[in-house]
Length: 103
Image (tube, rainbow, N blue to C red; front, side):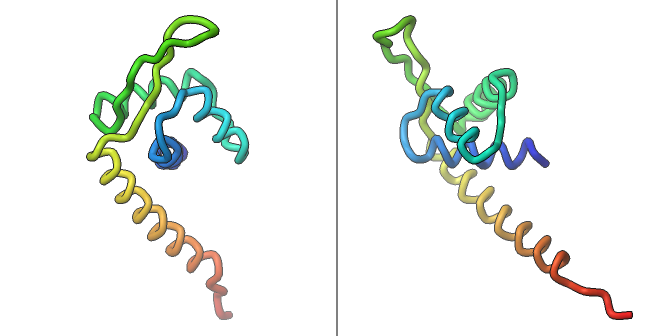
């Protein structure tokens, strides 16, 4: 379940524009979704291999070139589907949580 939520969050962050992996990790950390590099990089690779993300190399002033990610058109469509699935799941869970059993 966490994997799917993390995928949704990462795709949403990337949808805002070109992003470097450490910026993704910072944004996740800022909302208390702690993710380590060993989790994020394989996820980014999987999303890229699924053609949901693209990347470009950019020169860095403080070291080797960096890989920056962007969302592809199929990635944008997949993100829309994930958001709808999240809304549906969230609504269903909230209904169950709010329901009191009559005795």
